[in-house]
Amino acid sequence: MNLRLSSQLDAILKEGWETIRQHRDDILSAWLDKCGELEDKQHAAAQPLRLAIDTFSSQWLGPVKDIAEWLASFQREWEKRNGELSPNQSTAILSMMENVVHETIQSAGVVEFRVHQAVQYVFSRLHESVNASDCSSFDLEQFLGQIVSSKQLPIIWIAQLSRTADGGFVVAKWYGNAGDALTDSSMYGETIFVLCEHILSRMDASGKRLIPLPWGSDLLLVCAEGEERLIIPFLLHAFEQFQAAQKVSIRTREQHLWKDAVLLFDQWIMRAKSLHQAIEYISTGFVTYLPFERCALFAYSSTHESGFGLYGYQLNNHEIKSIHEHIDSLPFIKQYIQRLQLLGRQMTNVPPIYVRHAAQGLPMKYVKQFQLESIVIAPIYAPSENRLIGAAILDCGPKTSFQLSNDLYTAVMKFGQSAGEILSKCNGGRSDLVQPMPHLSPREIEVLKLVAEGASTYEAARRLHLSEYTVRDYVSAILQKMNAKNRTEAIVKAIRDGII
Image (cartoon, rainbow, N blue to C red; front, side, top):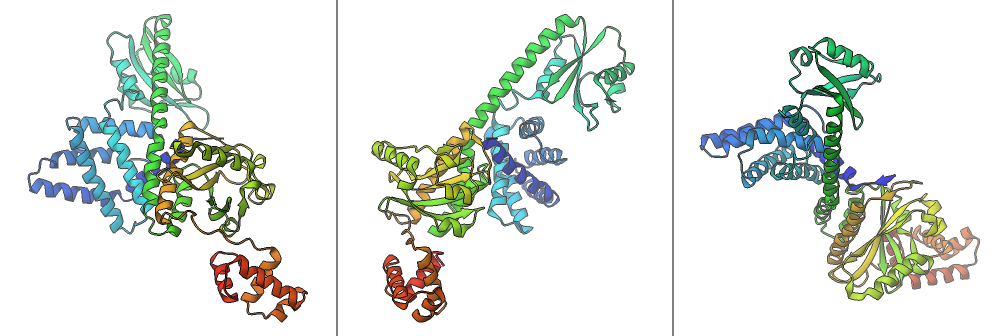
């Protein structure tokens, strides 16, 4: 599958809008109270606010299905009611309404940062919609309306058709002068031919032609006068030009979506008040704001030339934290780091690594353990210090293959930069993020577990079928590896680091 950043951001926007709809009665009441206060003070914002409330009320009929159509519909309603407002005035009104929404849902017990952020993103997109002069340039409804209203074209009306569950067709919307005989009743047909026959029987069909034109998964039915050979080429050309312009507009928007994602991610991780919180927020943020399912965050120690696990989101956290690998066992990552070192201070953007088949780049034991297929390795890099701090390994779940879109590739890179800066700040500028956990052998871990349970050297030796001298040697090796003065300190460090 081809991952796209737009899918994740659209999901966040829909979540925010659903939150607003779920509390719409309380929100509407609070908005009206605010409007009443302004009216009592004879404030100039009172009337625009009331019209803006009407705009929102017209959009509360159903959930968001298509983001572009929803924003275009909101923009049209806003233009009808508040079209005379300047961009600054529109921003002031929407900001006022957003503040009321946050206060209202918080009073209702909604305090999660993520939910409030989703609401904030809704209003951010609405700000863009109502203040962008070209927002409706590629709106299908306006385009069809212009065609049927043109006096130079012999087109009477256009019907937008949708498929039904049984494979038939129904008129979803009329454009132009279709007449009450058609628009006042439901128009359905098992086939296009049947539907056209039904429509013709309800209208004066003399000199008129019904021309079906495909549009995406739906159909458009054009009622025109005159010869088809003159009308169809024009319509096909017009729709082709409209669709091309629409695709360019969508592509341009998608290419800038990474900025929205980075802003949301930055807000998410900036809440961190400690290194531990920063590590957790970064790991969850990569999955929350990008279309990935799992994230494993690793630190890189330039001193030890090794990487070690910090946190696993949607993964076994203990298993991730137990990973400690020298870069010699990761040849392609070693080569990547060497290339970065050659660039020196010329580095500004450090691109991520996309690996289509994880088995070609990672040790097989991890590929099997976590059922890896396609992965993305996002460098955690602090540009201000020109320092590689670690990496986030991302995927879409067990045995799942995927490809990256260009906007997502850019977002992953920018996420890594933001993560690097916050980790560097929380770590106080120290060279390594945290000290690597000592690598204990399976037998040493067994000995340490028994010691932690209170077993004496004799008891540990008996239970492991070893000599007391061998157990003492293991304990000495453990203390040395863990840089611990005694057994108690070693046990405390082992529990803290998740070794036992």
